[in-house]
Image (cartoon, rainbow, N blue to C red; front, side, top):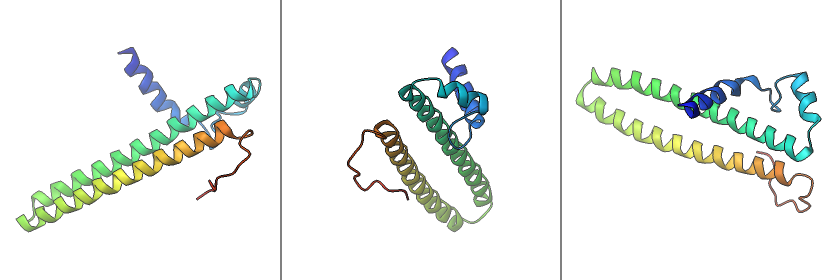
Length: 128
């Protein structure tokens, strides 16, 4: 149970960070006092948690929309139900593709942050 509580705390604390992964000026100063490696690891973890939270919220919104659509579909004809099934399947494929893209983006960002200053050869990993 303590692991669940920790996950819930991480989930809620993901909203506390700005675009760069800092909570504020004091947090920035505390992290700047740490070694560059430690600071980058902490920031990478925070940004990953923030991205996971965004993804979870998107999934929940899609689920809510899908439930609303399913409720409307139940009231419609059998033809409407078949169409909703196709829509659901395409939504799930789209969601899976978005998740894979987000994971790839997180991996690229993590590699860039970890290899940042000692990565002399740019392999074309430009921004999208």
